[in-house]
Length: 40
Image (cartoon, rainbow, N blue to C red; front, side):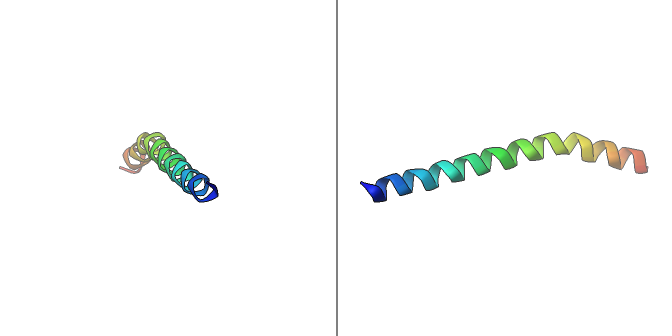
């Protein structure tokens, strides 16, 4: 039972990290595009 819970927690943490990094990238892409446009 404890092993199952640990696996679930690991999967959940991984899913959350993936989601966070995805949203982070999504919010940062327009910013990077703006910065590049400002440089040129």
